[in-house]
Each structure stands twice: as structure tokens, then as C-alpha cells.
Amino acid sequence: MDPLFYIADTLVFAGIFALLTLSLNLEYGFTGLGNFGKVAFFMAGAYTYAVMASAHMPCYLCLIGAGLAAGLIGFLITFPVLRLREDYLAIVTLSFGEILRITIKAQEGIAGGVQGIVVPGAFAPFTDSVRLLALANIGLVLFCLLFTFLLVQLLTHSPYGRILRGIREDETAMQAIGKNTVIYKAGALATGSVIAGVAGGLFAQYISFIDPYMFLPLVTFFVWIMLILGGPGNNWGALLGGLTVELINRGTRIAKDYLSLPVDPNNLQFILFGMLIILFLLYRPQGLLPEGPVKTAARKEVLRWRSSLPTGS
Amino acid sequence: MGEFAQILLNAAITGSIYLLAGTGLTLTYGLLRFPNFAYAEFITFGGYIGYLLLQKPDGSLPLAVAAAFFATGLLSLFSHLLCFRPLVNRRASLIPLMVASIGLGYIIRYSIGEMWSWAALSYQPVWQAFDLGPVRVTALWLYLIGAALFTGIGLHLLLTRTKTGKAIRAIAGNPDLALVSGINRDRITFFTCFLGAGFAGVAGVFRAADTQLSPVLGWDILLPIFAVVILGGIGSFYGLIMAAFLLGLAENFGVILLQAVGLSTEYRMAIAFLVLILVLIFRPKGLAG
Image 1 (cartoon, chains in turn purple, red):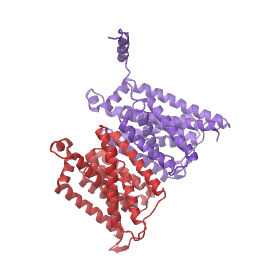
Image 2 (cartoon, chains in turn yellow, orange):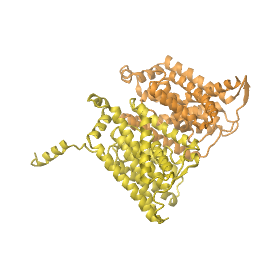
Image 3 (cartoon, helix red, strand yellow):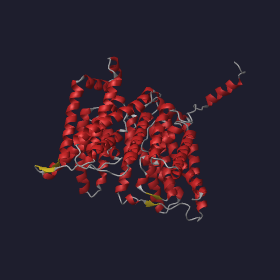
């Protein structure tokens, strides 16, 4: 295979997973909400994109549609359980991921059912060159990633983000100072689902064919490894985690062709990923890049004042 | 009439599997206060241990059940010692514990896939079928219902008549008070981890004998098991008994209903999900709450 194309492929997948990790970071890293059904919102976005693109709508409209559909579903599914303890949210999202896949698989009428659905590529009408196509795809994914990264970075370092962190640390205290925490939690989950939906749309556009078997709970597990490894509560960590895990994933796929191990490398990879996540939770729960201090104007003032003091005092 | 009786029997079979599989989950959930997603893999593991003894046509079911009980109990004990206890000691909060249980689940599932391959297997013994009044039953189903009854009565006696059982209920009810009154929390937790996962392993043997054995055996029924645990009220064994048979009824009547309106029976899972959502909206503490 064209090595340039392989690098492009890796970048596109790393970008899509980095988007998912950023969305989980907003939900878990900052707000402390355990979404164990990330794949459901990813899938909702991918299928919305597929259906809209099949109706010959332009790419940007399909992506917006994918985000909105996933966001709406995310809101509807999680809102009833936000008043309850956080483990209920985990169970409901996890179950919803299974149910959505089963529903689409069982229903021939919706987007091809178990057969899957072909997604028209956004750039295919404009060029025949494989390299140009790859470049356009990288451009689209990286643009979405940059935009989302800036958005999440701004959100989480604003007063709104400080409320989210407050909910994570002590929800009762936030209620005591008059914040309606359910609304904030619903907002974080809806925003996270919108991002996951856009990632799903990009995924469908890029691989140009989707079926229910692509959306196994494995996707959710991957996103969690990326976030735990990178550093929950740090958006740079989410990017780093996304890239690292995708590279490990590619690495084992290449190693499979060159190494002869007594065990199946695919099985071994998941056993090692499982151990990795447990070891990180045990010995480095803050991840590779720990969460930084909250940046406020007051803190900047203090730092400037402190650095103006004579040294040694 | 015969059809109705058959549905009731099917409900009892489904409910028995859920009861066996959910017992450990609800008891450890009550003690350690987090849902252990690796229970799906404990069920699968039990099924494969059973396969070791039931891959020949003359294999003995009681022996397979006993082996699955002990092996799965030990697996759970090891995973508690190596993974969950260190995390709890480091004051890990709820979500990291759940993530760790998912990670552990993948370790177990892919180890099983490595050892026994991903292809579906089936037990070799053939279960004798006979007519009991209007319904047709197999010996396997009678064993299954017997095992569920035995578990129900045995655990009831354990929880109400023994010191250990009372200690389990005390810790689930109020951990601090239990600790102050001199209950050895570690010992009780080890015991519950072993016992609960043992029952899950037994559920795996029956599930595999009734259908097929594959590394996703447990994962495929995790959703209804969670629905049952939450419907029964987390940590409540008596709620679980009721919930298991209620969901068994709902599923078996639901399937008839689905066929009647022309929908795929794959939506059977959706019934459990619907029950789960309705319980969370209207009665989050479950039947026992």
C-alpha cells in the first residue's frame, strides 16, 4: 500500500478518535459523568450522516445534522437519570449502546439494517486522485478537530467550565450556591453527544460504508483508554491519548505481519489494553498529562505579583 | 391453555438464569457500591469451565456445576485482590472502579477467546425431554429451576440465620456502623465475592447448555441482568428474586406480542431496556426500596 496513504489513514482515524476523547473529557474529565455508551452517539451521528448524504445533501449540512441528532438523543436518554446516582447513568448509557445497535440491525427499513449502507463521499465528485482525496479528508477531520478543541478549551476554562468542575468535585456544594446542577450536567452530556455525533459523521463519510457491526462496545472502551491514558480533565491529554492509542493500535496491526507470536496478537492487544487501563487507574490516575490549575484573571494577577517580588523572599 | 403454561415455564427458565446470574452482582454491588461489569465475563468463564467437563456426551452436569462454581468464585476472588481492593484502598471513586471492571472484563474475555477460540461451542450431553401435563420440559430445565430454588432458599437461610449473612446485610445497610460493631469487612467481602461469582459461573453453565457457548455469552445477557438488579433494588436479594421472574414473564410475553405485531424478536433485549428506563424514571430504588 502507498505509505503516504497509510499515514493519512492513521491521521484521519486518530482525529476522529481524538474528537470522541474530547467529548468524553468534557463529560467525565470535567463534569465527572460516566458515559459508557459513547458508541451509541457515535453511531447515531454516523447513521444520520449516511441517511442525509444519501438524500444528496451537502457535506456540511449532513455533519450538522449528525451532531444535532446525536445531541438530541443524548439529551433524551440521559435526562431521566441525571437526578440519580452516577452509576445509573453508566448503566443506562451502556445499555442504550446495545439497544441502538440491535434496533438498527433488526430493522431492514432503517438505513439498510444488518446489510449496512453505502455513504456517498463528500469529495468524490471533485477529484479522482487518491492522494488528493486523502488530503481533503485529513483537512476536513483536522478542521473539525481544531474547531472542537478550541470550543472545548474555551468552555472548560470559562466560568461555565468552573461550574462543571465544581459539580465533579462536590455536587451538593454547587447546589448550595444556587446552581441547577441537573441543567449543567444535561448541557455537558448534550454537548459531548453533539461532538460524538460529528465524529460519527466524519467516520461515515471517510469509510463510505457503515454497518451495525462497526459500532460494538469496543469503540467505547477505546475512547475510555484514550482518556484515562492521556489525562482526564486535560484537553491536551485527550489529544495525546487519542493519538497514542491509535498508534499502538496500528503498531500491533503491523507487528502482526512481522512477528510470529504463540498467541493471536489481536487477543493479546486487548488483554494488554485491559491491563494498561487498570495499571493507569492504580498508579497514575491523573494520566500522562495531569489536569492543570484553573486559569482565572485573579490567578494571573497573583502570579504577576509574585514574580515581581525580589527573589529569595 | 397449553400455550399459556408453556410461556409460564419459559418465564421460569429465563427468570432462573437471571436470578443465578444477578445474585452475585447485586450482593457485591450492595457491599462495594459499584456495578462490576466483569460479571458478564464471570458468567462466560463458568460456561467454559463447564465445557471442560461436558465436552463428552457422558459428562456429569452436577460435577460441571460444582467446578464452575469454585473456579469462577476463585477468579472473582483473585480479581478482587489484584484489581478492586487496591483501587478501593487508594480511594478510587465510583467511575474509575467501573472503568477498571470493564478493563478486567476485556482481559478475561480475550483470554477466553485465546484459549478456546472465538467459534461457538456446544455441550455434548443430550437432555432428555418429556411431557409434563400440557408442557414439554427437558431434564436440563428441571435442574435449572431446581438450582434457582436451591439458591433462593439457601441464600435466604444464609442471610437471615447465619452471622456471616447478617454481616453482609449490615455492611450493605450501613458500612460505618458495621465496622464499628466489629465486623471484619475484608473477610465478608472476600466471602461475598467468591459466593456471588460462583452463582454467576453456574448461570453460565446453564445458559451454555441451553443455547451455545461463546466468549460473548455473558455480555449478551448483561443488559437484562442489570435491569433485574435495578428493578429488584440494588443489594436486595429478595427484590432480585421477584424482579428476575417478572422480567422473565415480561420477556416471554413480549416476544409473543412482538410476533403478533410483526416485529423482529431481536427486540427481546429492548424489553429489558424499556423496563430499566421505566424503573429509573418511576421507582429508582426498585421493588425493595
